[in-house]
Image 1 (spheres, rainbow, N blue to C red):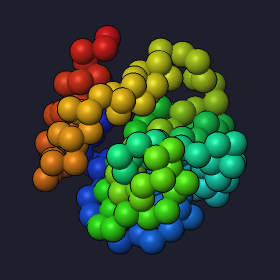
Image 2 (image 1 turned 90 degrees about the vertical axis):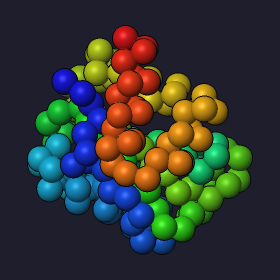
Image 3 (image 1 turned 180 degrees about the vertical axis):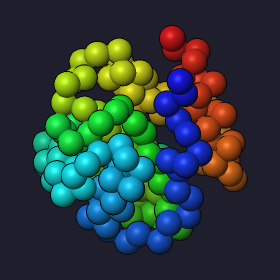
Length: 152
């Protein structure tokens, strides 16, 4: 099963703050049946962010939530029309969000290892450049599933 799926990608969203992004992610997680409690997912995203920024380098952020209401490990990808402040490691605005959702019961399992592979991918310049250049959901899905497959 491929962890990145087109129905979990939302391109060119007009969200203006980190809180709006977290609300959008929580709503989508519930709407896509990834989770049963959007309020809990939102709270877990906030709690995790308060532990330390999930804003990486080059405009990418990897917010994540681990919660009992999450049914299956999933990734939701959101690109933004305009970069937003995220307290990123390099101080740049964030416009590419790869959100990870992990059931409490699966923390530390194979699924989590696969999800953490996404973070490692973002350390590779050629991957971030290809993601930024991708113009369609399908291009993002193909690229990430192919790159994640290399790590298995």
